[in-house]
Length: 344
Image (tube, rainbow, N blue to C red):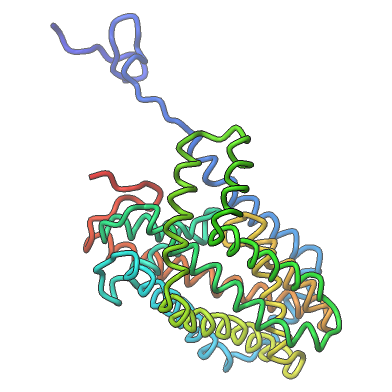
């Protein structure tokens, strides 16, 4: 048999079928992955246009550069606290990873968290690959951590809410929502009711089986005393997040808001970003922060500058530190790609 003949464009194929061996590029997958990022960036751009780019630029020019170093250090600490807290949950789930390795994998997962909805579950995939955990057990550690963190964040917001005499319905609804999730996961009769309702939906059986596994693993974690004890690290991370925004506002307009009010803004904005399912909450989180800061008396330009600086800080660190940590972790643990689960 002779070699395949090149066609007029130089492509190699069989006689009569010049494109038979030409690989077809599939754009559907990459486009679906980029769509949430495009939506988030569009939302952020729209927010900048709404508040007036000139007033935003004026506010940014007033930023006190002396505030930048402690803000960056605190933001790095936020990621380290997340990894340290996750380590103790992983240990309960059966992981034999060292503290440094757990933190490394946690930071590595931030790359996807910043780019895709529900990207935080990338940490669970990495833990499954590196520590040999079942994916359900690893996902349960992430679920428990984020539930505890959200609850502490909202509790820190309560004094600011009381001081403002508003927002009681918002914070109350969030606290009730978090407690309802805890109840569904930990009270078997309640879970069975929700499970039966979910079974009526057109969901694949595999999804329902994964939900059952996640519930069982989550209950096992929540019923342990050490889970509650180490959750103080979640409280510390929530306090660091509030401090970062407070310092950023101080750098733009000293004395404009109290620390407790900054905690209120961070809590409501964080929840708003989480329910939006946008990558990293980009757009929804920032719009919520701007609206609340304006409500607290800041002008639109300063409020938008604070939200933008916070976004650039956390997304920039998540992407930069995350990708660097991923390169190290991939070598150390033979991880799969950032968007694929390793099957070897």
